[in-house]
Length: 299
Ligand code: NAD
Image (cartoon, rainbow, N blue to C red; front, side):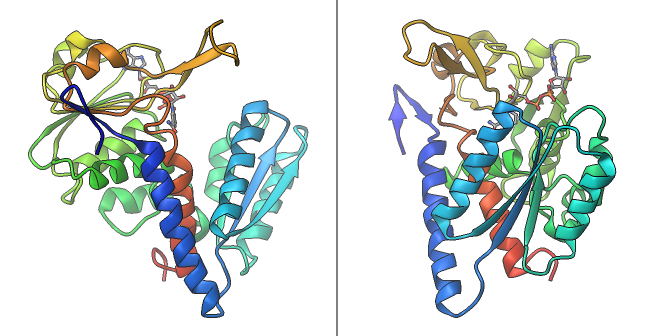
């Protein structure tokens, strides 16, 4: 555990590499016993540069751990019905364990309709109503990648959560909202008293400053400053932003929703950007796909 000037820097890069090694070892054992390796299918619609990069990283990660992967590429003009047909084909293919549809989708396609078409049993992104409902009820469920990754970081760093006040900033369906449910459930990590804050919250500064665990998923670079953080708090920064920086070869650097240096001075533990929550996302997706292949969520 890397401890810097009194605070622990939560190393998502290292933990995600460890998780990938653990998954690879399990896959090697499965195939050694004559079983088929986990198989993930990804559907990519259109030519969006960021989406292509994300999907390529997911496919590469599958190869690294010994999974099979199938990438279905559809043109930006594809009709909603044709996309739904592709999903049904994969739903019905017994050789494929997990299916993800890379977001965002072109405007003429209804995301909710597409998400709802994915068989819950194969929904390794954990976006379908069935999996969100199961998670809320505390049933076995695929939990979406980013919240799952945060839960895993808290676990692996053995950070105490029971009885703590957890403040979540942001209520998106993919991060803030599920995070608030997970931190409030009767489990570890969990058993927090949770405050879910959003754009209409009043006195956000005071509420944030009362958090023992502060989870920030607002999508505004440097929003959380040192004065918004209680001494000794655990701070999880989900935001990722590219800031122009001529001193870098790439011409930019990555920052989070939290002003790292200021907040690290007060925190007991904090995730950096990059290298904190981000790298955990793909590890979580791989983990869910392994669960799918083993039939652990939907036996
Ligand atoms: P989003 O835009 O869907 O949601 C932002 C939330 O912040 C909304 O619920 C909104 O109500 C709230 N908000 C906006 N202004 C506010 C204010 N002034 N005070 C309080 N709340 C306010 O964002 P998201 O999809 O949850 O993503 C958040 C950030 O996390 C983005 O920077 C995104 O790029 C990043 N992200 C990172 C990962 C990762 O793997 N590390 C994954 C998903 C998202």
